[in-house]
Amino acid sequence: MTNINFFKKKLIKIDKLFPGKNFKKLNFVNNIKSLDEAKTGDLTFLDSSKYKNLALTTKASYCLTNKNLKIFIPSSTECIIVDNVLFELAKVLNKIYSCAEIDYPDLSLKKPLKNKFPKVKFGKNVLVGKNVKIGKNSIVGSNSIIEHSVNIGQNCIIGSNVIIKNTIIKDNVVIQDNCKIGQKGFGFIPFKDKNFKFPHIGRVIIDDEVEIAAGCTIDRGSVGNTKIGRNTYLDNQVHIAHNVQIGSNCMIAGQVGFAGSSKIGNNVSIGGQAGVSGHLKIGNNVKIGGGSGVVKDIEDNQIVMGYPAIPLKEFIKKNKKDHNNDWNR
Image (cartoon, rainbow, N blue to C red):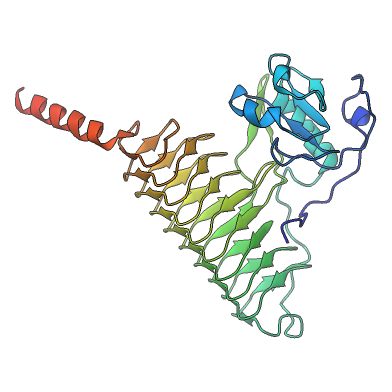
C-alpha cells in the first residue's frame, strides 16, 4: 500500500537531466528519493551538512550536492556537483514529474458507486476519484472529496467538507470536519530576483488509530513523506508542513504549527499555539508548553517552555527574576 505513486513520472537518463556532466554509468533515473529512502537507480540530494550521516550510508546511484559536501557521499554513489542544490533539484523534479508543481483539479471525481464500495457509508454530495480504495465499515461525511488513488483503511471516519489527496490512511482513523490533507506544501527556492516553486512528489501517511480534529491542514512531502504515527491526536487547526514526521502516542493541542522537515519523537505533548521551526529533531517523551517557540533540537525527556523554548526550570527562574525586577522598579 505504501508503494502507491500519485504522480506520473517520465523515465529519463541521467545525462539528459544534467547535460554537459560526465557520468560513469548512463542509467535511467528510477525515482528521486531522500538520502535514507533512496535505492540503486535513484537520484538523491545533499544540501546541508546536518544530513551528512544519512549521506554516508545512502544507497542512491546519483547524488546532487555541492563541492563542499561531496566528501560525505559514498564512493558507490556518483556525485553531481552544482552551485545551488535545491534549485537544480527543482528543475529535475519538473522534468520527471511534470504535474507536481501545482495541485491541478482532479477531473476523475464522481459520485461513489454502491457496487464499488458496498461496505462504506457516504453522506450527501461526496465525490471520489479514480482508483480510490476505502476499507469496510468506513464512513465519509457530506461534501467531502477523496481524490484519485487515495487509500483509506477499515473502520475510518471522515467528517464533512474534508478534502484528501496524495494520502494513505490506515485503519481506525478519525478525521473531523473541514480538514485538508495531502496538498502541496509551501516550498520556494530563491534564485537571483525570483522565487521558484519547489515541486512536491511525496505523500501523507497516517498510521492506525490517529485522530485529527476539525480544521487541520497536513501538507504532503516534497521528496519524502509526511507521516503521522500510530495513536497520535491532533487538536483543532493544527498545521503540519511538508516532510514532518510525528511519532506514536503524541498529543498536539490546538493551533500548533510545524515547519517543514522536523521530526517529532514518540509520546510527545505540545501545548496550544506552540510553533516548531523547520529541520529540527524533537526527542521522545518531550513536553512543550503552550505558546512556546522551538528553534533548536530537544533531547529526550525534556520539558520546555517560552520563546525561544528553554528548560522549564530555567523558564520559571527567569520569569520569577523578571517579576521581582518589575516590583523593584
